[in-house]
Length: 124
Image (tube, rainbow, N blue to C red):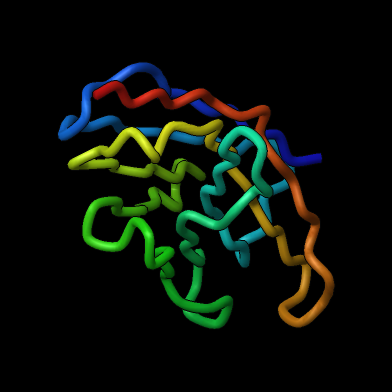
């Protein structure tokens, strides 16, 4: 069973930066897609960015709302995904969740695992 441990959330001022990290452990397959989602209070969880471990699993994707401000990256050997968040805005305040879609075989339904979430608060 894959486990995800997030770190790096906290408080930042508008215009500032934060870097989130998520380390996966357990049975991580070589084909996977790791990513970040966020849930603003009172709203549904939404995609922030995803990045595949291999090209066959897709392409790197950033949501329109964060493109140009956030950058997702991965260290495949360390099974870690990062989210660099720059030029933060108060409306980015949310709980940020790490996710992995873990494919035993490409095209098969993935194991879908979530982290516990880390709070990001951006003040004015």
